[in-house]
Image (cartoon, rainbow, N blue to C red; front, side):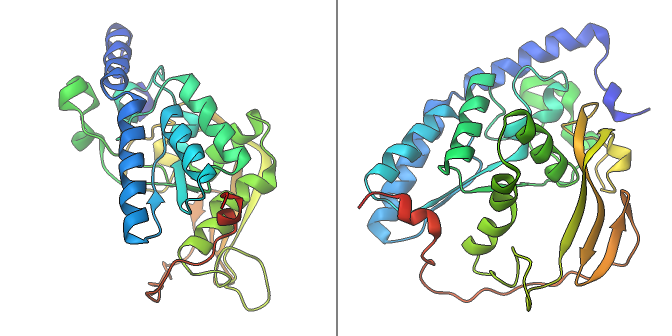
Length: 276
């Protein structure tokens, strides 16, 4: 049975209400307070803070206010927060921490991405199976964590287009900006002579319905299960060699660990937007 059928007609309404209860139980104010506290401590320590998984309007408000005071830090969100909200029919298959929130928060995140308050888009991929996810166990029994790697690029392209975000902004946040943050640019994050030949070729018009079985991962579900997304990779090139084509892996794994030198944070481009 395909994983898209995990909720039957009788349990769907109950699951959606319980999922919404999870969102209400962790309102955005808690996230805002956590970010504010972390920023305060990072400022004392002189550290570069990397805020991960921004999910709320209140958290974004803290980010904007801190940037106005001249604080220098980096903010990330993920494609599940940008593409899924609390009314999603997949219910607890989309359970994560922080939770996916109401459409109002989602709209705020897209505003933050467009304006540059959100600097990177990550995956936060957790390759787990439905058996350990336990969506049928409800609010307290289901587990957080979900697979997002296989839908990362299609979700970003699809929902970014719906929100009118320029393609170059989407790609910048997903490729060059993370490489800058982690000190591996220009080896990664750009197309240039001397950079690693890691490329993806995308058909921006290709539409596919998400099915976990097609994503080439170990998970048997996807939080985007059953959704029609527009814009899919048709070829992936790693180190100059094609490793995936038309959704199928066609080569052996050839990844490697990239060590990073310790030292002070780089002078990132978005630091310049902070008022001094």
